[in-house]
Length: 284
Image (cartoon, rainbow, N blue to C red):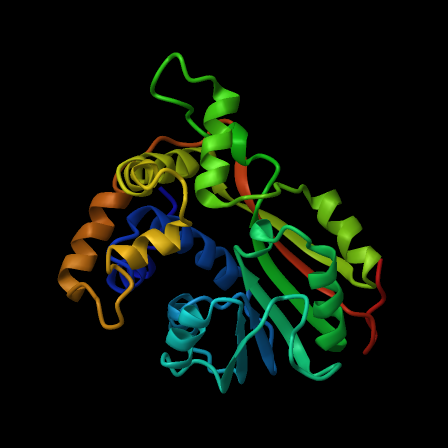
């Protein structure tokens, strides 16, 4: 498994009740770190509770001036307490309460796939970016379903199983690079980079971990609540709930051990960078 165990342990320490998500995020943040965070003043779109950004900044040894935005007031409150942001706004992505051309970059980690009406959100991203500014984001991609191992029960069809995964994860779209390129162009942004991550074996490792966590809890609540709401009901998102470092390291080793080499060439996610024209940049 291509997993940075130090990064995975950091994520598990912050989120001991989310081993599957932490595994996915460790691979995802490694992709972001390899690409590099943009410089300057940034907006974290869909910042959540801010723990992911705190982990990312710690691994990158960076301290940019950041503003967080999230529609969930509980998550925004927790994000403000991390110390990673100069301020955190409670607002939807299509109505960001910040001035035009006020950010050098916008970052969004596994958020855009959850948004039903995406176009107004990208309009806002383009509005708040300065000329030459960068939009960097991660999303599940068109190959995600193909990477899944599939249902354990033989009478559950693969399509029905994939639909169950999508409902549980609240995934609305799985776009390819051309899909994202077209979307960026519609809003005056030029796609400058797209790279794949999360191999098929890694998707299947996430799938296995999720079967025994959210996969068990979600049916108990009869699909009435989002996973984050289930975690709140169970008291799992209380501030200060952390694993000791040595336990997080042991758990990271157990989760990431072994794994088969990927012979399929399939990937489940995309890291995408787009830029606003200006400062020598021209939209494609």
